Structure formats: structure tokens, C-alpha cells
Length: 227
Length: 169
Image 1: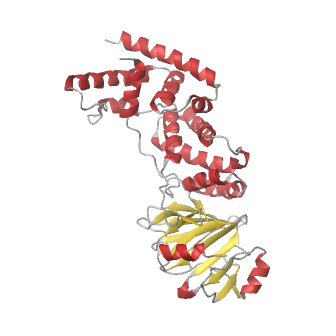
Image 2 (image 1 turned 180 degrees about the vertical axis):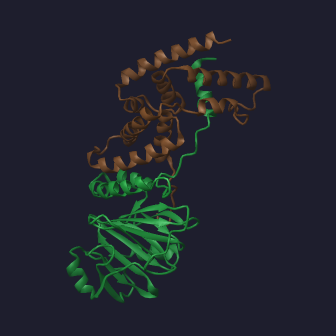
């Protein structure tokens, strides 16, 4: 038998260590230092990745866990609860659209009950209040604000498509949103809607997040109707 | 398309992780190297040429990340030794007569041991090409050499491996 044949047998039989989920578990304890460094790195790379070849960006983004301008991280312990996500000041939809400086999408077949501008996710973030307590927030994807979504053990995280674009659905359960501000400080927030799941996606350079107590399928239907 | 779920551990992560494992010899180092490589790749996406194959480009970045760790750690892939002694570890032709299977297992164990005795340059090129199954072009990117160099280095490495196996009783 040839050496090449033996090598082929070896290649079939060898046991590789299991490929880890690179989007990854956040290792707060032994690697606290590098977590901070990593977040800083991500702020820069998020901006850099925006102009890239879409399908390659999607592949890399999927491995890293980027969607809707947030990086999704699985934690080993349920994240600490924080204050409810600050959605900013009450404005009319027209005011929000004018001041945000980008096209604010509106879900069809949903009554917009109110709008908020600013808050934890940046001055140009517009949040639409929808029926059943759902909230649709939108912000320009290139805004220099970085958020990490920390998801506790056992909470559903699945990659889905919204109109053919990658999105991530996080079911209801312990999670928090760590927002890094421009001055480099971090603040941890809980969901804007208690007990809700969240759908994160991007469209036309805008990062969108929909918090809703509805099912994943209903959340996807609302997301796909945003115009 | 709606509602289709994906695993985040598909082949996009597997080959970078395994490449880093061959180069660093440690699953923990490989995970960090692959993770950092993806961050760097994201950063460098603007320089990625549309239409060019993605995997060789990504693996080159992985190799750079693994390289910094390898130099500090000075290890080699631990599976070479462990797998040889593992009882579950059997050749794929399990339906063959037992004596043939035993013989094949011995040959494979001897091969693993011989791989472990190769120097690092030889071992890496054999493992990347024949164990991990990277293409010549991908291997060249990972090792930072021309494809022709991969061919000649691999040929020499296989000669040494053959000679080593013949020497062993």
C-alpha cells in the first residue's frame, strides 16, 4: 500500500477537536482584559466591513455573530439584569423621520402608535412603538456606536433570513445589551420590552431590531413588511 | 427563504479552526486564532477582491494569527499521539477481515508516530495537504510560499516520511 493511501486512511480516521462556535462564548473571567480589547477592535471593524463584497461579508458576519449592528455573544451565566433599554424622547413619526437623517422604514399592516428618538443606541436611533408592546428600532449602520448582545444559556439563537438577508432571532429569556459609548464607557441594558424576543437585521445601511412578545414567524412577517 | 436556520459552526469556521489547530497544536489557541482571524478578515473585507476565492484568502489570515501564537507556544498538534492510542480509532474499512483491519491500524499508528518525528516544516505541509485536505494554493497561502514550493516541500517531506517508516521495525 502506498504512503498516499495510508495518509488518506489517516485523514479519514483522525479525530479533530470539535470546531467551537466562533461567534462565541464570552469568557468574562479569565479573559476580561481581552474582552475590552476585542470590543474596541470590533467598533473599528464594523465600520470597515460595511463596504465589502456582500456574500463574503455575510459569511464572515455569520461566524462572528454580527447582525443589526449588534454582536451576539453567548454567556455561560444569565446576564445581570439592567435598566430597561432607554429609547429616548417621544416625538411624532414625522419629526423622527426628519431628524434621523435616513429613511425610517415602517412595517405595513401595523399601526405606529408612537415614536421615540435617541436613547441608549445613539442620537439618530428611531424607535417605533407598535401594537402589543412591540418596538422596532432603527439606526444608521455606520453610526460609531457598538452594542454586544449577551444571551444567557438555553435561550434560542437562530440565524434566519429577512427578505433574503441574514438576520438573527433571539428568543425570550435572560439577555442584555451592552452598549459602548463614544467616550469608551459601557452600559448594560435589559430588553426594552420585558419577556420579548428580538430580531436583528440590516437593510440598506440601517441596523434594525424588533423586540416583540410574538413568535419568531410573526416577528419575521413584521420585519419583511418594513418599507 | 424565510425562517431557514443556519448553524454558526458550518464549514466557514471548520477549516480555519482546523488550520489553526495544525499550526498551533492546541484547540484553545486555535479557537482564539480563528476568532481573531475572522475579526481581522472583517476589517480587511474592503481589500478582498470580488470574485476571488474566499477560503484561501481567509486561511492566509488564519495562518498569520496562528503564527504569532505558535512562536510563543512551541507546540505541535496533540492529536497525533492521542489518536494513535485511542481504542475507538479504527480505519474506515471496518468490514474488512479483522487481521487486515488490525494491520491497517498498526500502519496508521506507525504513520502518526512518524509524522510526529518530522520536523515542523515537513509535518505542516503533510498535515495541511493530506490530513486536512487543503488545496495546493490554500497550503501555499497558509505557509506563505509559492504553490511550486508547496509541491517540492511536500515531495521531500513524503520521502522523509517513507524513509522513516522503512527504518522503523
